[in-house]
Image (cartoon, rainbow, N blue to C red; front, side, top):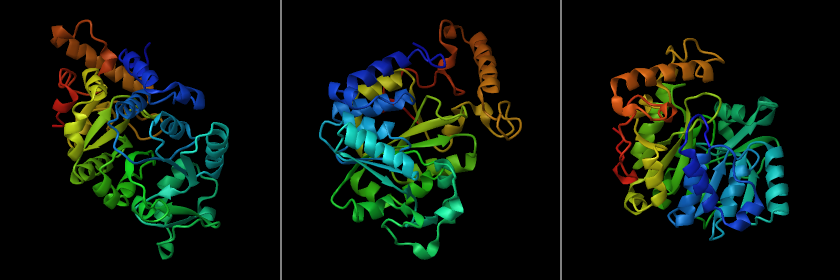
Length: 351
């Protein structure tokens, strides 16, 4: 069982299956992509180590992740699924709430950001969800403070505003923020909730596409007293797309007892990163002007150039290190191939 040569996906795929109770397997299909991340999330829930509280899936798309979260939880915690596309929200409601009977799943139309407001639908036209997220600069400042539905515009919410208003009385246990480059905005709008509840959350980043943004994001995660762990699987079309699993330092001691996280660390499925070391991961050749990105455009950081660069790097490294023989070369997409291979999760260092 191999995807991009990652033989350790067998372990994580089995882990994902084990984490799902039989009722969940009937309620919805487990997500077919981002297998490692979903394995970790599902197994942390199964272990009872996911912080207490509601779960958020922002950028829910057609609802596969939200359905997975709502199915796998044993304590019937609420899962809020938010997406800017009304058609997606209707699909989630009809397929998963009505048909599958997931009453703990609450879908809604909207976008998360750093301030409450609205975006004009006429200005956005028929843009995709990712384009809508990327156009948060169209936020209409005179409408700040609006939290209710607006038939003439797309509502923008802060996480703090939701937990003080529509979601009052809830706490936040986990959040999956797939917001297409607006991660910093979401975090800045969630600072009070994060400080109060200390949830685990994930963000997605194209590590080398905008290195300044990646650095700023990691610096902010560190500033709010969180550690970031890069999940070593490709997400999106660019080969430098990765999820970051973000864990509050206040929970590090309890999470050090997690067999799931130890397995992920031992399998080299996660690596601790900070604002400096993250740029050594996720195919460093994808930096602008690098060998995998000689010119900005549609071919930058795609399969052909990236895998050719990788094979050359592995071959050169293997010739200089006899202990490399017999290893799977595609397990390693960062520069310092074996820097953390023997550590338990609790021993991973980001420097």
